Image (cartoon, rainbow, N blue to C red; front, side, top):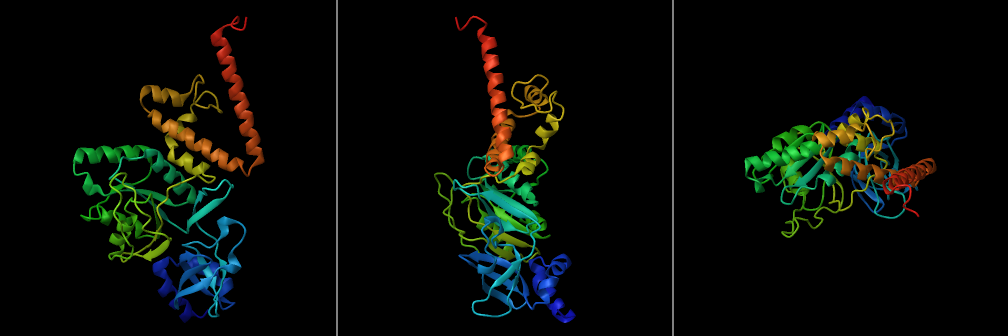
Length: 368
């Protein structure tokens, strides 16, 4: 690639996140005459790729492996053929980050939702009651992806009372240590400048349930109605899957945004680090427990239970933590024989402790 063509590529692709590091990654494919580009949409074995020559439609047959986590997805940087009918994607560049959830099938498979993301924007509607457990679930996946999560409380205009707003933000902040929480009203423009400043430095993915206001927020950030919007149902605040594909959009203030369909199910996928990050205060307390393998259930000298008794730690947080840890262990155990054996051993140990405690409570003569 000549210096003039390299400059042309930078000029065309910089708004989509192209930088010197990506150029270095692509160098071996440049000598083969392939074009660098970013996937802005994927649809049934084909994808739309933005290149210095414009948006190209390409076939992904050459880069569709058996591993579902390696299929082409929105946000990937790829090497695409300069011509041909059909035109093919020849390879994907190594991903910096990847947002992955488990599929709804009974098979132990993950589904990649977006790649090379710097910020994960979790949209939560204030039109319905907050589900803190669901927010924690989204955040675990976001942290695990390598992206910086941000919680956006949408439809803030529906909560005009300042005291109520403050309490809602505080509840979310308690459930999201280290995560910015922003109140946004796309109707009144409230908070949009804050979000625009966050997403202006890199690529962001917009996540949330149907009806969370993701498409409305995307339109507000882009400055025009690029995404269709439908009203949420009054009965439960849920939407109708306005967005059906993952689309990468360039923002006028800088940065790129990947809008995603509403997610009904958000299953964990090997997210141990992410869960630990979401519940960092519990993991810090656990380091002070008397036993290094403390399960925080009834063990003496448990710092986590002591924090609950003192009111320092909400019991709901521990319940949510246990749930996500167990779920993640089940997912990992499907493909990890060693972990399956450890889990069975732990179950037997806890069962023996439970039986011993019950017998001690009943006394030595209860069988007679």
